[in-house]
Length: 335
Image 1 (cartoon, rainbow, N blue to C red):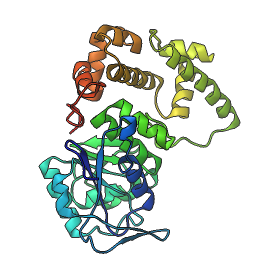
Image 2 (image 1 turned 90 degrees about the horizontal axis):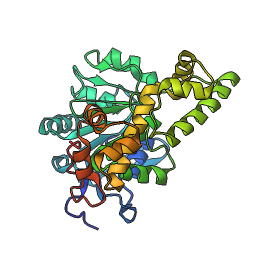
Image 3 (image 1 turned 45 degrees about the horizontal axis):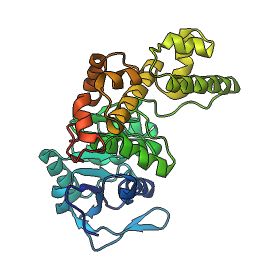
């Protein structure tokens, strides 16, 4: 079926050495038709320098490109999979095409070791980037001009996104859907993939293997998070959550960060933002009521957090992503 007008166009950049897992993630997020569940239509294309030769991947798999690199001029989003060998140079035509795409202002994302491809193209020079935690030192060694972020799930700099390893690629793909099409579309895709719909890029890449005591703490903290989600409309503080867990605020914050990879305050703010986004998409409640139900206390506070975290306002977000909106991917926060 040919893509309809307004369809979001995604280019999967393919060349020898790309990882099959990342190709599968990209294909699962953008290559599956979920329009019957309210998800926008996507046009995912496998773009390569040579469209006549299948690209072999580890595990005996092969990928057949269906568009030449010139198709990148039409793409709204370009995604580069991770690599099996992170120091082997990518094909020169691919690197040139990525440079031209960035110069045009196209959003580019790289999963896991795909950051090495962007670094080879010079696109990460002087910019912040992340890769798998086990490859951080290698990226620094081979590309010292890159501002490598030591511990995050994904980061953005100048419309270039990079993600940490494996599951973090799923997080970034869902985040890009959320930015372009709203929280509900991302949540629908996440449910179909049976994965978490909302992990922020600032979370730690991994958590050390827990001890039995840490397991008990994690159980208690899970109960606290569930309590917080049921009472988001209340003026919860970190001290309130610590008291519910039966811990001191200092001990609670330490255990919470060790268990979740983020601080209690940041986690609480992220949940409030997610709740507000859903209310703005699903309801026509007035702004003060949305702010109250999401726990911001006032519309002014909610507006400030939307501006700092989402680079938009609650009203602009509703206009772009509410159930009756027809703006689709032309959102004020989707570049």
